[in-house]
Length: 333
Ligand code: NDP
Image 1: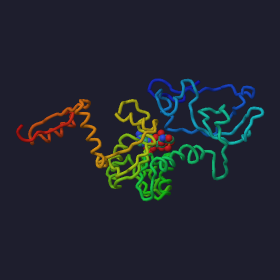
Image 2: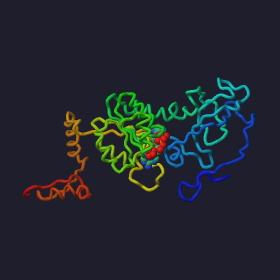
Image 3: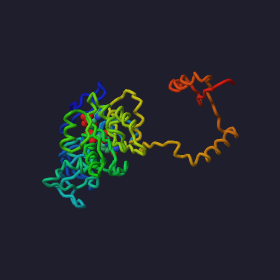
Image 4: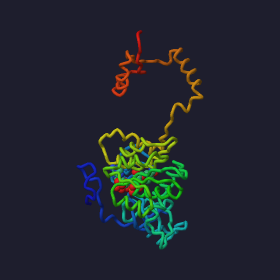
């Protein structure tokens, strides 16, 4: 055993490396299990979340269990008389964990086809989970349309770089945000993304404003960057909240942790303006009046006196000086 990660909390080692785990023997294999020699392991930001004992879209990794991870590898053993189309030597993708040899139920393995242009690793990227994420974030959640301005954060990453390209292919104007000159050069020169912004640059905020308003946000980062982007949404904009990496590894309460639930609970960020309901105002007004008359609805007001107090009343709203509706009385009682 040896620590392979000094610490996530600054005190204790989080992982240990176990050597000399007994090789799996044929007779130990259940009828529906295979042994896979792992070739590539996927490392994903989500893993950080899997270490937290909190409610999410997937159970946390149990203490003492191998770290969960997607991987590709080759089947080295199958149970005698195994059914199905898998053979020893086949390339497969699945949840293989951080292990050299993985014992996996056959039904959880997917056979993959590789050739000179399709390497096994693609099944952990564009042809795997990141690719699916980019595609469905754009087409399923955000429902992008040609001509729309689509902002992608974490743009130089696995998901982000695919999302940028898919949006461009669909005829969108793509604004890619990534950290550092090298990543920006990759997006601009290698991927052909025209508008690329470096969020580490001193002029980032100004540069982003110059982009104008945005129709779709493919959000990977969260925190201050998301906050800034939300301030520049066009009417009927859609925010596909894919990830919030800036918050994953912080324990300090930032006031922004709660919105991660939008991801795990598949909730939507969707705005509305009450004016949109103007043709139905009368329905609500009638019902509210009935509730007030019946004593079911209580009303509180905070009264301030004098025209010259209007500014203080307004400022007071941001200082919590009102209870219920803040009102300014103009003129004499
Ligand atoms: P990436 O390849 O994008 O790797 C992470 C990148 O995030 C880093 O390279 C870094 O890029 C950026 N980053 C890290 N910390 C910060 C920070 N504090 N502020 C801004 N950027 C930061 O990872 P993936 O493509 O695998 O995942 C991208 C996002 O998508 C993640 O949030 C992930 O959790 C999410 N995801 C969600 C899925 C879903 O189903 N909802 C599925 C898959 C992924 P830079 O140098 O540019 O800062």
